[in-house]
Image (cartoon, rainbow, N blue to C red; front, side, top):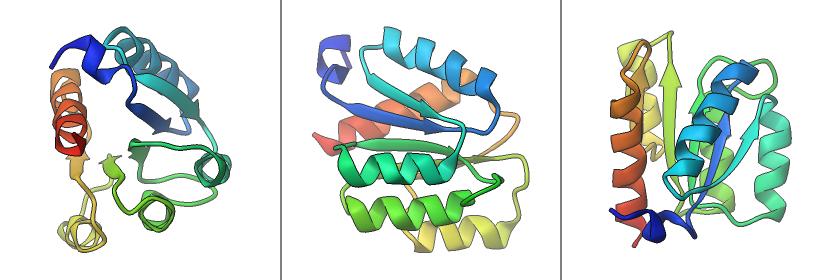
Length: 128
């Protein structure tokens, strides 16, 4: 997929560790995505309610809303959105619930950056 194709894809990244968001914004921005980053999941959902978005990459364990709640809210706001949950606290039942709620991909930390890039590109491709 070329960068030009990614240019109009709006990607929201939610992670309570600021360094993660900044690093991913840099990487996906270079790939041509329109990227917004949030360290607060509630602020991210409020942003989603007012702004169009295509893909959400969210951490699972966070203060305000956890990744499952973000998934549900994102799907309520935009049923066609692709949501990717990343977590260091993976349990089989959590993944099962996420897929039942329409998650596009569920990734366990630590994962390789290439794996996340591939998942986001697949999500972008599935939207077109």
